[in-house]
Image 1 (tube, rainbow, N blue to C red):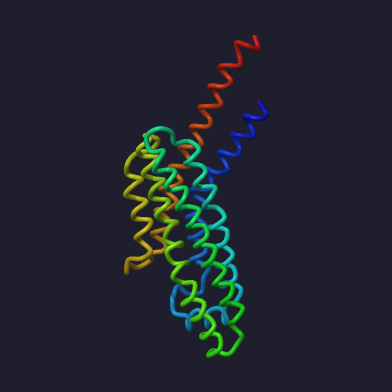
Image 2 (image 1 turned 90 degrees about the vertical axis):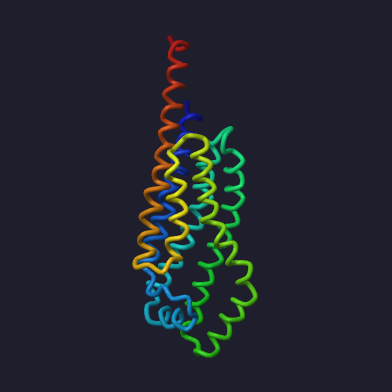
Length: 221
C-alpha cells in the first residue's frame, strides 16, 4: 500500500500543476511593472521597480518548472484514444519549458543591465535578442500549443468534456489579442480549464485507489 500511496501522491502533485501553471503566470503578469515588449521600457521598469521585476522573472521560472509536471499528469492517464496527441504534447511541453525558462532568464539579464548606461544596455539586449530570439520565441510558443494538445488528448480519451479544447485555444490567443485585461482573461480561462482537467485526474486516482482497496479486502479477510 505504501507504494500505491506514494504513486497517488505523485499523481496528485502533477495534477495540481495543471491549474498552478496559469495561476503563477497570472500572478507574474500582475506583479510585473510593465507589459511592454520594448527593450527601453523594460530597462526603465527594471531600474525603477527592481523588486517587482525580479519577482515577475522568478514567477516565470516557477511556471516553466511546473509545466513538465502538468504534462506528466496528462500523459500518465491518457491511454488509447488521445495517447498520440498526449505524446506530441509532451514533446512540445519540454520545448516550451526551455522557451519559458529562456525568457525568464532574459528578464533577469535585463535587470542586471538596468543600472548600466542606456545605450550600452540596449545594445547588449539587442544582440541577445537578435542572436537567440529566433530560437527562444518559437520555443516559448510551444508551451501553450502543448497545453492545447493535452486538452485535446484528454477530451479524446473522454476524461473531460470537449469544451476544454475551445477554452485551451482561448487561453493561447487571449494574451495576444488587443483586448483590455487580456492577461487577466488568459489567467482565469487557464485556471478553470486546466483546473477541470487536473480535478478529473485526481478523481481517477481516487477511483483507482478505492478499486485497489476493494481487491485487497477479500485477501485480507
